[in-house]
Image 1: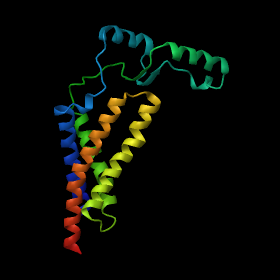
Image 2: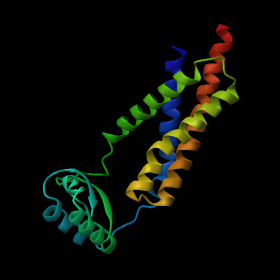
Image 3: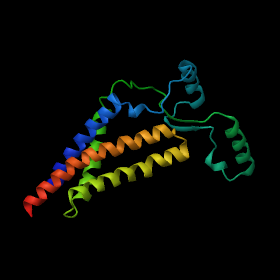
Image 4: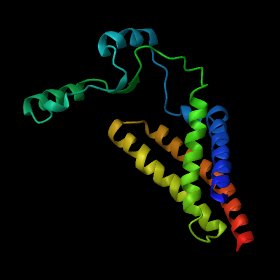
Length: 191
């Protein structure tokens, strides 16, 4: 039960930190830009991408042709001379100002992440500092295993990637401190 309470506390703290990081500090918008001519870009999406939602990388190559030298040479030349784009495409659109579905999912994600972290923190009679170090290590691990590959392979902007590290480390240190306190408090009472 103490792990579940720690997870709920950590999930709430991380969710609240995320709101501060995005709304007050702007860490969630670092590296994002507005298009020069949004209407021109939007008008080209439907004819160019069709009706299939998904993640698109431009320029692209059919994976079935990646073993063909001529196709790869043509792709390489096109990639060197063209702009690059990595995009999430929804042909039907969505109201991004309505976060009624995203907010509960974010809270659930934060809480499930906190549950995994609380489980690891509770495996032994760790000190507060050790539990906090576990939270730090977990945040850096998550960043290294997710955002660094996006930076490396999909060309996410460096400042976006670094801002995500700052957001994750600070958030999980704050949430981790609350969780470490709670887990240590309950552990010392039951020992």
